[in-house]
Image: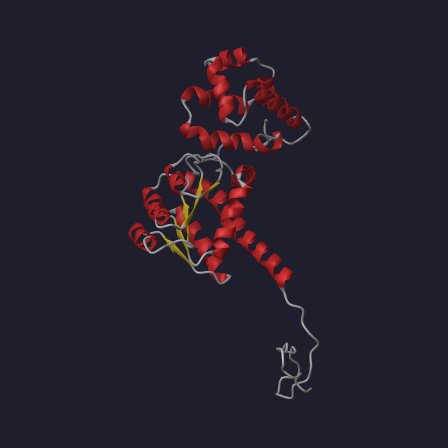
Length: 312
């Protein structure tokens, strides 16, 4: 059964193509980029015509449709038609040009803001909320949480740890690969290890997560490549999206936006669950009474069986 159009397409189609691009063959990538760039035109094409337009085969077109989450080309074509109708509803066209060295500063601001919004929307559309909920529950119950990341991802790791420490959870961020592995060896069942890597292949991040996984800790990967090596050792995989990369906006910059959104989702999700539990279990307070001990009012302590009520 095909997924809902607004989930896979809308802003998410281009994001999915970007995320899967490293694992695609060149022919599959041509088909995917074509349908993402011209949904209305492709919706009117048969599988044979689309194969001719992209210089590929009918089998490649069907394989691309399945890679994007559909049983076959017919389902992909129906979804493309729905997206085309959605785009023709009067929505303003998006900025499509990269930042150039001679752009006025106003254009730079507009393009960066657009790309940031797109990265956030794409990450939200592609985030698996079931796995996110499992990660939130694991962090909430953890004795200790270790977070691994280097470079720009290391800054995101520090942001997550800072948030967890502020709410009283034990957490550590590791950007040094030797210290990361040394600490991962000490983890056990009931602990959590989080690896943040856009490429999904950063050895200095994958290795400590592997060690934590083998020690029995719950492992979480925050990555822009769902097929990357880091996912082999992850109990939960939280996929991020990136804005368009360019010479003036490398992946280290564009990946950070989606990663920070995932970090905020983990933090707010934990706070929300904790608040709900507290409200559900908070004991009813009894009527206050005077104690004469210097504190004018205290909550009455419940009495055990056989005890007398304290005098006011």
